[in-house]
Image 1: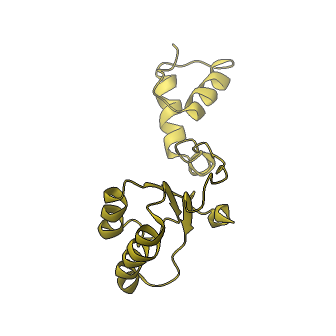
Image 2: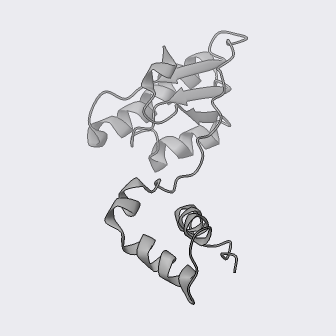
Length: 137
């Protein structure tokens, strides 16, 4: 009896090891049940995660204000309106809309107001990789 493909790798490996030396009716079910309830097996089991995404280097800007990079430093409530105002008045109206804005993943930059402004100005909004703020250096 071969194990069904949907079961865990640990169950299959354990089953294959035991199968080489022993056999009893219902052996595979017993092995799976044992592995599911074994604290050590559960502790060593890898955490299911999606594979990490591909990091893409940031190419140099081809013109002034082609790309701008911003990070948030203040609290969310006061900063959303200030960031939107700054983007519109100090960047877009003075220098034209940049093609790309790179920001951290702060709640300010993910807010509806900032997202709407970026969409209206046809700006490509990119976020830095989570937990890698030095990407902006």
